[in-house]
Length: 589
Image (cartoon, rainbow, N blue to C red):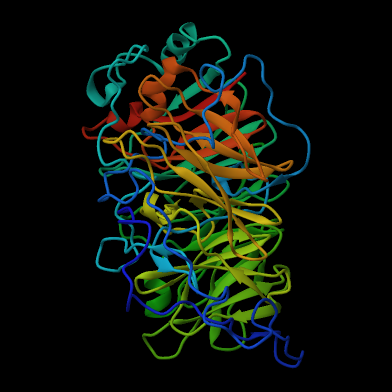
């Protein structure tokens, strides 16, 4: 994903803002809800009055885009002010225990309802936020960003012995590598609890990794034809399940009782259709029911899959429809719904929030809606009609409801109330926002709810700015927005050469990943939801920097006081490299 070129867009005809909220309405026969939010009175020029004055440039952010580090390549983040202690953690510090978790999805530990965001492009209404064109001719496919590494991580001058040889790992085992890292730990630094390698001979080009999913003391990933469960404490193998065909899609979250339904290929042939479903018990590793479904017509047959878990239902969304099945036994819950507006993707969680497309011509699906659907019956509970010409790109959060919208080369962030009425749009802040999603990481069908770089609680939305500019040594920012007014509240800065990435919220705090840099370990930090200076929660060892920065396409999870980096795709330059490539690392005390 190319990074936005500056704080503010050029003035003039870049495109109209999202504008006043469209009509919100329940299913036919249930009346019409009145729009709520700032548009209950006649609209002013933009929802906040006069346009905001251009923000002052932040050093390093108004310059031409530079190659961005990956999530776990030089991931770089930081605080509102530099910590007063050497390093950024304290010996023996424990993560906070108060409050229930909010946020989640695969990137945030699966602990709540926060879901994803997309890096695209945009203007938010009125004094709004502008986001730059993604750099690929307006296709909406990012070309660089915090989820990608444009080059090899710089691991020179590292205190840890770097393995050498084919693939960089064939001279030392993961266990020996972790032991060497821990032997050089400094005071107050967490252990590298365990390190895993790919371990599977893959076809040329590599394969996507799905997960991680957590069930009790088991963490699970799926890749190619294998689903694997590891002990969260020491990484020991708890079980391994061999599938008959390739995994080709998966939800971001399992059910509350630890069940997942995977999308699998129909056969082992290279051009086989992804129209099979396989249920797996994450606790025991046992395979449950398996079935196939019919994909009808050109739109359905060619579209990528967006899977979700909502209560006891798994949904499989495509361009023209979604099908839902009961996770316990595979029974069909609902298929194509009445009308020409069909949900094409859901966000995982108890709230079944869907993006729907309304077919206006044989090859045109550009009128979008946001729908809340009862996952047990398929009944539409409410519908929000998105302004014509705008499309739902990602669902940042299902509770509270925060939606990423796009229109050509523009991007807006819409906030709805729990009943589906308009709440606000986000505007202002430092600009140069950058969020990375599964669409940027994996080859197979991306979900709508898997993005790294956003989080939300009941009143605030958090979003990261672009990744670190390694040439200038600057860090990045995390900006907080008021979900009632849509206005920017505060920002927190990262240290030089590191970047901050929002993960999830809990107990009145935002938890963030602080990326590793040369001679600077990464880790987990937190900042109060009211803003201020970040505080260390879990310090990754400096001796583990080469390993940590080697996770160039990783998902980051903080669960149970442990942090996990999981590669989103495994591949190799030479045959056999993928077997030794590091696939997951865990840090903790």
